[in-house]
Image: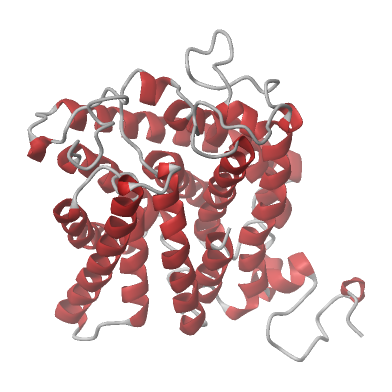
Length: 414
């Protein structure tokens, strides 16, 4: 729950000042929309038994409708904690994942279109994907792919979806001709701090127990993040002769992303290598985006979450070891990684899981984006609204200025 406001600060500081409230709201509104959706049917789709005929691709929305039968007793998926706590913990993942997408579309996507999109995206894509990976569905039970805390479910899904939406929306007004620099780097680093701290719950908590695997996930999360933050600023130091605060924060987030699928399956060496390598990969992806200039992923969601998530998922197939988590070759029916005696088996399973997630993300984002555009009269704000800033035009407020002359009367400003 701390991570979603943290994400809001991270993204908000990266946006321009005239869009600070709009950017913050894209994260905060997920706390409202997805909470309601999750309680009504989302949790049931993700974590109930397979819906008949869907072969492990989604749960039955009627089983836990309105949290029916979700009480204080444990369930098979979470035998060490009450069912209510498991439901609430998983809700926080469902909330932050669509909020991640917003970083690619800030400063130009209509708020109404965004709200409807994340509702539909969570319903038709996130919840079934969570079932496939964590709810006993196809990717975990049939492919035996490993994803401890969300490499596929959270980061690849949101990163690829962000890329597709960025293409569908087009570039921001002034992209390539105006300075579109972050307006508040201290806010960015505040967001990074909250994310880094919250991620310990995100990753270690996914063990659903206070045991050795949870402790290892905690350690691995911190090691990979610190290593990635340092490798990013070392790249900048070498290339630009100046290590930036933004670079440190970007590297930290990249490290958090990459270690997420692997944190409960790898040892310290694996975590360190994953952290050191993910920053060059994400840095290169962002450099390539800037060079090609083909799309405007405003805050590099695909470059960090998409590419970092894919690397982390694949790296799990290289470094996973049952010496850290015996469930790999036990209850999960998976195999050790390439460098731990398992051959290519698990690595291939990881590739399959990544490809399935990418294909589904592309399909559902494009289709749902088209549907939302038809319903809301287009995904994108008007050119005038974009020029004036979405804080005023979408929300009737300003983030910093004491000049409220442009704020409509309905906003309640004297």
